[in-house]
Image 1 (cartoon, rainbow, N blue to C red):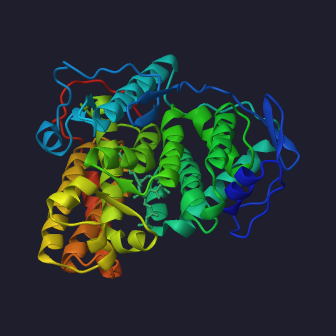
Image 2 (tube, rainbow, N blue to C red; image 1 turned 90 degrees about the vertical axis):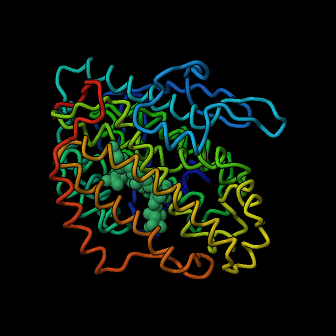
Length: 441
Ligand SMILES: CC(C)=CCC/C(C)=C/CC/C(C)=C/CC/C(C)=C/[C@@H]1[C@@H](COP(=O)(O)OP(=O)(O)O)[C@]1(C)CC/C=C(\C)CC/C=C(\C)CCC=C(C)C
């Protein structure tokens, strides 16, 4: 990930890196990008539609209107669970009523679903259209995608195998998105994280804007730039992920689940929103676009909550506690108990509730996976089943997530893969109501 790091720390530097990500030079003009001395013509489709607005303590990169109060039929599938977990209107520490993170994030979901429908309507068909490329550039682009595939295979082998079942265009696009997410995460989580400042993240964000405008900085960006020119992917979830990294720089405690939910959206829910336009919805699906986006968001949140519960000890050793402080206090626990790392009955009972909540997000996500286009379902089922089992492993470890890292053993992984495959064969259920398909692919 040093490519990203070097650039954000010193935007004018020439790039090379030790991780074998790539070696490129930066050559940009306003309408083309040049990689290793050649240029690609790109359509610059997306503008940064985001406008930051402040909502109490949190920022969302959105140009959304708040539809906070008095909505009816807010969601179909999850009222039961969600009302237990977060309410739409919450009280801030000063006792004032504010809009909940869930509402803010759901507004993003609605916006994404609306945008993608609009994009699809504007296109004559859903199939990827060939760009106008100068002779010789196609090979370079393919090389860029291959690099993304290699990175993906190195960092997430099972997931990489799953992507091989997808159509070639979709697989390449998912790899490009994966690599951008990985690089973004590495900025604050990688070996050079201590050099990362908010300014560096601002530079990473302007680089993102450039690639969305057809001016990628390096080869890996070029792959994503190509992807966003071919699929109806919006910049907002990408910007929001960077916002999550900013949050990580300035915050190491979360007062409430509402605060944590927003963080989870930023760093992982966004991945779900980025992925849906690539994966596509099955032509026979009766689900609304919104409900599928919502399930994708839920899977990201579930994964991140699981990640947090698995890594409690590791995070504590870095001085970080990603658990709602108010819930810890209600359970009679504090940061000191976490640093002490003793598994007590209080801790077990606290963990039981946290695990239950994470599972409820997985349940919500499951409804959406069957709605995806058939070739995309297997990798998603595989990742869902594998990640979900981490929760079982935490329980099997007697909730000792202080000194034991829960993981799914190889044999269990191997069993999960055919199970995921079998699940992926099930056609979309018609439980999700209104018909509003967007991708008949
Ligand atoms: C098929 C599939 C899973 C596609 C997603 C591919 C993709 C673009 C992944 C990017 C993942 C990434 C590098 C995110 C950066 C932030 C981050 C690190 C988030 C954590 C992931 C796990 O990280 P890590 O690899 O470090 O974990 P380990 O320590 O190795 O265990 C997260 C916990 C979140 C990842 C979130 C997702 C994969 C979202 C999945 C949602 C979908 C693919 C939407 C599916 C659609 C429906 C309708 C359900």
